[in-house]
Image (cartoon, rainbow, N blue to C red; front, side):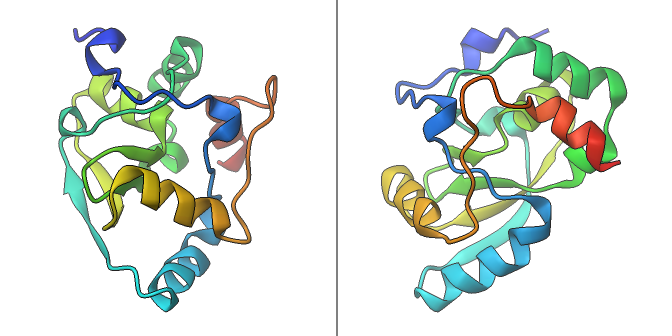
Length: 142
């Protein structure tokens, strides 16, 4: 089993500063990004090739792994052109634990520019400290 520290990146951004795009807003986000002239691509990838940029909370990951929450695991991860995670850190870690590939949407910009673009998307949310955990949120979507 891999350790979480093995996958931590040099860039560290607090969760409450990370953009969160709800499942129902993905299509709108894709249209918005394309209208800005930013190239996007989709596919699936071994999560070990991705680079997280926020701390990963083991409790949230364990809840996703335990429930094998389809709503959580089917939502694509948002990644930058240089394979940094933009949204979906807990799903990423759960996929590593479950040893499975993940779907992704790549915003073909370097990580900091991709983050800046996502933060400007009108429907982007930011989870406040102490807000509902990712695992509970995805479990509620089922």
